[in-house]
Length: 196
Image: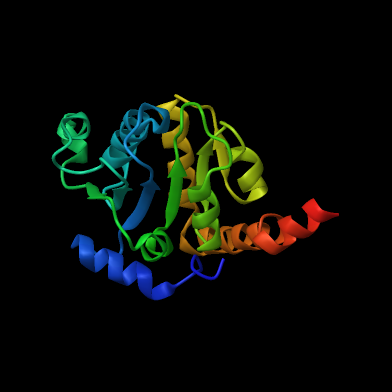
């Protein structure tokens, strides 16, 4: 919770690194390239969103999520995604990237336990959209949106809802998300409950 925290300057830094306008909305997913993480579903939802809202950009971070991965690049042939999806690959500055997002997504199709990336995004004050896999729904609670797994249409609808809610509403939701992590999942409090 000390490394992953809100940082207003991170958003400006990330927009500059990506070379996109300041009014853009950044929807990101931090996950290794793996069928479990359902990048295909995320990109199908992104394609639906991109056609409706030209200001939205998508950031993918993680091992195998880069330009030389044909599994990813063939999915990006969708016309509406050209120039809108940014593949950052494996990075060491995840706290800064997380804090720069407007919305974080976990589109896992199966196999999640307690997803660290959801908790990390929430610690950064970023509202989350998650699929109802493993503990994801329990982690976000009322501070995010939970959708069915393998349902790009539902995922796109959740993205649209959060984008259209506006920056202030997302900020408020993100603040509640961080409070939820501190209250329920911060290491000291978890250890105390376990010992009790």
